[in-house]
Image 1 (cartoon, rainbow, N blue to C red):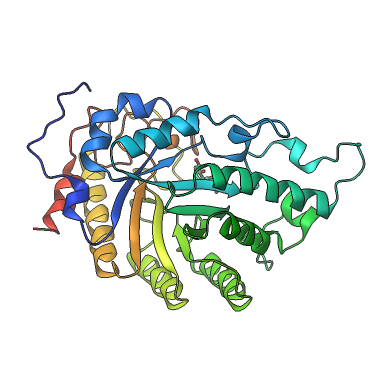
Image 2: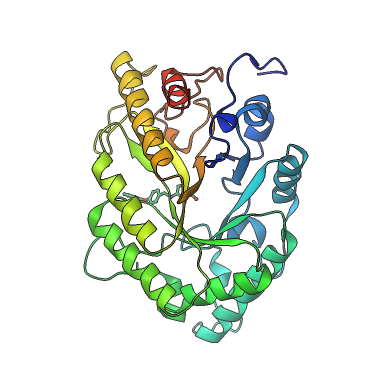
Length: 337
Ligand code: HXH
């Protein structure tokens, strides 16, 4: 798409002005290839990968900020807010972080000192430019009895690595809103674990302000009732809510079929119906939900092209591969007329 983006249609972020920001995840490529779509419809950006640990500090004390800086500058140039993603996570974090320089077993104090140093450096660099940080991503386990997932963070530092991450972030930027972010956030079993984690952080006066509901949903799951209940539960903790990574896969998770060249008409219609229901719900809870971010912007690029089936195309957004509005876009806009 060149500079000829259709400017006759409503701007998505304007349709939700005063309710919540409308965001998109971008990367170094899409910020170029989707530029006009992004600046027309969105007023918030998240870096898909460029602010992850392995990208910002691939080797100890070697910081590589160029790509993240470019995304932040792009957002600033176009008056968009930025969500920071993410400071502490078990994935996309380099091995050196969990290895002792001497080759000895890694110890808690060294790991926490490195975490503090990373957080101070990164949060300080973007201070005043990032309105919310996903401080900790995906620390809760999907199944079993234990609340926290098995990880090197948990093994080495123990469960208060989470509280420490929030404290270090808050000290570095007292004005940023600090979020705990997770997926399967609307599945009742995991919802209750996330609820109890955040409740215990609050009781310890840890500086946490919100819960990020990733929102990697599909045509059937989770049910609207489960999403509503998750929003209710989390809001009752007094947390601000962000939908942080919204997409609606046209395949159910168990469906591993390949070979489809375009979404079927049934898929496109069901997807529109789902998106309309979601945004109706977001509007209903807009007192709590202050930001809604898609994990991408248009169907020409999505991480779902490689997950959970490598190389299988997906069409999870409200704009198509040519950046034109799909039925879902119009059904969402209808809610605001
Ligand atoms: C998100 N994880 C991350 O927050 C984001 O940083 C990344 O760019 C994309 C998505 C979602 C996710 C979590 C777990 C996962 C896959 C994706 O692994 C699973 C494996 C098997 C079954 C279920 C999940």
